[in-house]
Length: 100
Image 1 (cartoon, helix red, strand yellow):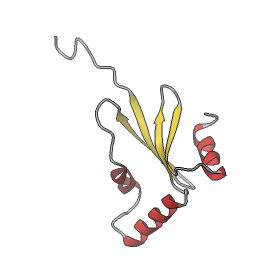
Image 2 (cartoon, helix red, strand yellow; image 1 turned 180 degrees about the vertical axis):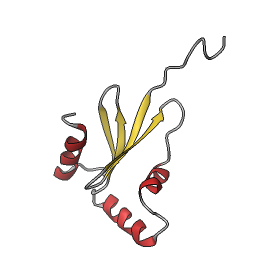
Image 3 (tube, one colour; image 1 turned 90 degrees about the vertical axis):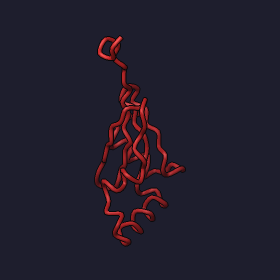
Image 4 (cartoon, helix red, strand yellow; image 1 turned 90 degrees about the horizontal axis):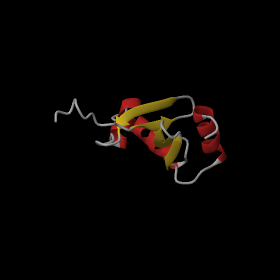
């Protein structure tokens, strides 16, 4: 049968990047492939500028940039970076996603 007769149910997810002032979401179809994190960060920051690259790297290292996955159907949030939670991370997650 043709694909139109048996449509595939896509499960959409979102990669997210949270900074102090902004939230960025990058939707993708989970069945296929997810966007590489470096490509997502390049969409937000000018990583070709050594100064910007250094600032982003430092903020990732100290947990001031939060990276993860959000599953809209279940409202599940998975934090990839930073590995350790902190009051700041919990506060930003609550500000963006509410009480999850």
